[in-house]
Length: 270
Image (tube, rainbow, N blue to C red; front, side, top):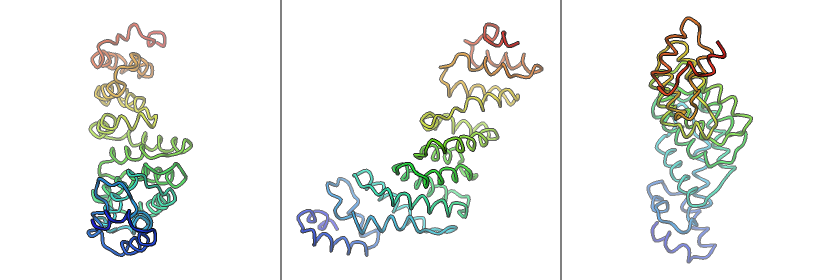
């Protein structure tokens, strides 16, 4: 393989074509040298070899796919993408297959890892209905294994604008019932993905605080906001139940000492 890789650019088009047809018949281990960096010419893996990888990721079957083979396919296609390879139609086919099989996958770490890696590859796809369908399917089935990371993968997919509301609603519904630890991992660890998607978790977080679930929810909202909105908590207090307002107002000052609710718009509201 190394000889073919190094000598191939000097071969004729006919010789290269014959070699690529032969390469497609070889197993993943034998083909490994063709996917090792650095690489200046993708002649050996364009065409039949790349087509086989696309086919592999467009024809897997749940509930028990061959994960090792699929992960190799993902890794190698990401390598090709990083080196200038494109196949928009192939990426769309992968997304369509995933939508059809997602519901039959077991809710475990192996399935989660595979789908997360596939989604990372599909970030390079052009926006389209197939990617939108995959994103909404993933958002509707976050599973029990690391839902924060699953939602972060969804938010990083190149969805079209008209699909964003459905995803926002699904993420919000999950955030309304998530544990504080899971919410923190999602909101803080993946803040960049939320920001790029234009998803603002602060309204949901402050509502949980106003429901007297603990000042930690207010802290999380302020931490995500990075203190850019000094009126974040005072504005939220406008919707506080009268019976809980004194306690919540004290918590607001505790969470963010620069906030004095007595001088905020809440006074006018009251």
